[in-house]
Length: 146
View 1 (cartoon, rainbow, N blue to C red):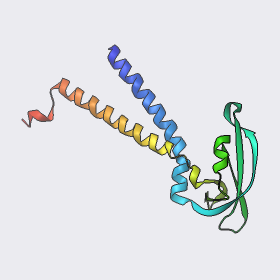
View 2: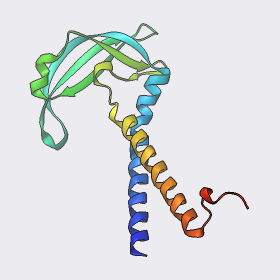
View 3: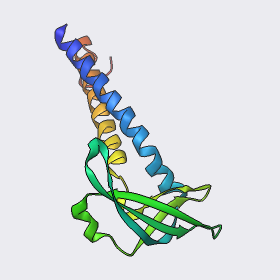
């Protein structure tokens, strides 16, 4: 019984992680399906702080969307990576809302990748559980039809 409870808890943790990664990957999926790209020009950089008050460098790029209006895209990078910022970068944005944008070179592909990996783990766990249940009931496919 304790082994079953442990398995159930692990399944719940994997499911919760899957939900979080699926939520995080929604933006990347929207960019992949509906996004448009435009050349962005570096306008300014300045010192700022990131999560947990770490020092960061913010870089603001300006780009023109399909409606020919200028929009900005601001990213934060580690100070050591600030020297690698390019004068022009490709910006991806949503035509329905050009304020929703990010640099193509800074896309967060980890979320969709994590969602796929966790989905594969979930499918494998369910398949193993079904196989174990079938063996316990004696309804394995190996026995053949009666």
